Length: 415
Image (cartoon, rainbow, N blue to C red; front, side, top):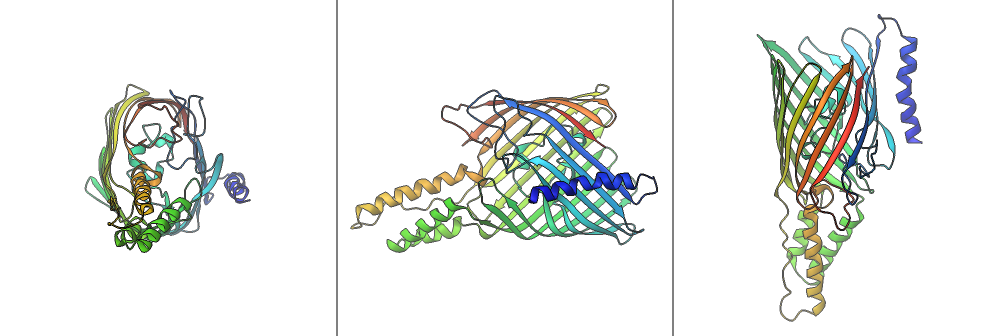
């Protein structure tokens, strides 16, 4: 039922646009989309975007990189407007699903200051507001090493933005606050409360510089395997009087734990030279790995063709220490030792599982062809190398050996 309701909301702007076809209309309809095919060179592993239930294997699939977005903007008066954006894509379900990605009212307080209230994009990346708009980006998809490190796309709350030009440089400062929820494939969901995000941008001609910082408290709900592990640690800690197990359970649990994401970025579009880079640090007070992620992308235009290359890396900086004792005190029953070994193995497996992910490096080559107004055709090849665990790859089967080659072609458009 929810899908049908949201799908109807996505169709509504088309009906509205017909009713307000005149240029003087306060309603503005726009949209974007990508029609893509994605595949890998092996049949015992899948490549996906963050939180997709399934990815691409040897058989080309449309699900990984295809999407469709519609946006309606309504101008109420000279200082107030309303915006809604719907997005159809394949996410944590086995099929395409629809979501309400933006829904906010915007008040223009002055020439430099505006306030938005409702559901807004979470400004944690260089391209947060248009990461799903393929046409607006050089690469076919944002580097997963960076863009998988914050799972939230939007926040329910408010933001205030100040934007002013001094000479040839335009400065933007944005502060957002609210809460959000992220449904994870398989049942669990991740809550972020008291989420604050600071976004600072300086634009000077072809150069853009950015700094961002987000802080929140996260809670993981409805994950049966984690609940079982925490219960086992606490039961063993109490039953065998090993206090370190109870402490470890508290350290691992994701229950109102602090998390932060700090990033810097730069983009250049000068003459025929195109470049973009981001560097970020993720930190949490839970079992989720602390990570460093970065990428650098460069390209050069030849008429309507833009070949490009990027290199991206995700590295684990730290994780919760496995403090399960190696042995039980003398005189304890044999079952104690077996219990500790099982618990130690379960805790160790958290490092590369689920939201923790593993380490990964990707080299990408691609080409963009702007063959028609508001349309671009892209072809991209990624060489993905998991450096620890399975990296960001999913549904890995026995016999898999890295690296993996991922191919994709996509038609991007805006209207």
